[in-house]
Image 1: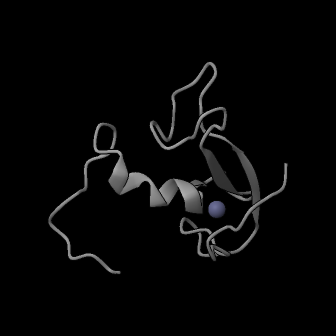
Image 2: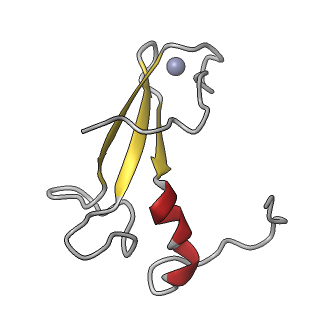
Length: 88
Ligand SMILES: [Zn+2]
């Protein structure tokens, strides 16, 4: 597996320091929850990038580009959160 972009995250929000590691993995669960239901493709599980702070263990999860593009197309699984203006 190849690590993908960490979305520009270089600092831990918990301690405001940068000692982060990242990896890329499937989001289909196995024995755990499906983290991105409905966003995979046939025979291709949705993937996530996980960024972990070595100092405190704070973890951040990021959906991949293709998965994010499918969010609005899968209302059966994903409902837009309203109340805040969209940034882009
Ligand atoms: Zn930290």
